[in-house]
Amino acid sequence: MPTLGRSLIAKIFLVSFLSVHVPLIALIIHLLSGFDTGPVPVFTLILVATLVGTAICLFAIWRFIRPLHHLAEALMKYPQDKSVLKLQSEGADEIAIVTDVTKSMLWQVEELTKKLKHQATTDFLTGLGNRRWLTEQLPAAQSQAERSNEPLSVILFDLDKFKHINDEHGHEVGDNVLMIVGEIVKDSLRPYDLAARIGGEEFCIILPRTSGEAALSIAERLRAAFEASYLDPLPIGRVTCSFGVVQAGPDERLQQLLRRADTALYKAKAAGRNTVIGVFADKNI
Figure: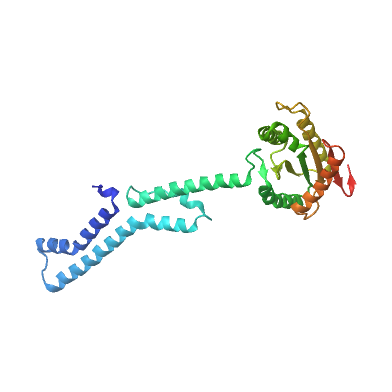
């Protein structure tokens, strides 16, 4: 059987039992002490003892179930308020067990939610974000750029003749190429830059605090890094990309940015691939 400290039922039963018998215990003590046994003193004693016993019982039960009340309040505020995860279990009874188990389950839910969110917003091959993630992140980046009166630029690029790599060497080699591209991008960008794979072999990079001219330099460095990469059985220089670079305008949405960047990318393809083209204020660079 559970000990008294580990059983809420046992504690409530014991308190209730003792509280109910407070009038009887008080009466016995009164009689054994030789006090007045008249009806009025005895009635008054029993009445007061009953009230005292009831108050003790209610107070004790309130103390016992107060942790359950705190748990219920915290759960009602979840998930807006994560305070339930910080609750400290009091004692070792059933309420403490329920509190600990609830916290453990919610921690697992939080971890699973993080993993699912990461999987839903991350490209599994490259480790970069995906199109959905980029769509969610861009408004905040644009708002920050507007508040700070700083430029924001976009690089759109894709792998040249990627289908030929898959057709000639198989999809495993193609996947390895995508992973190398992802690693080069991650190693080349700043912590606050945003990079995502938005299509099969198409990538997009959002560059806060970066003018169009500076974005051109970044794209050129990436172009050279891709060209210099090596992946067996492909020769050095086989992995190349074409780049379109634009600087974002005020309140320009992602689709508008991508459309302009795609125009620049198309010109880079038409210029012979493995090329960087920027389109700024109706000028090609």
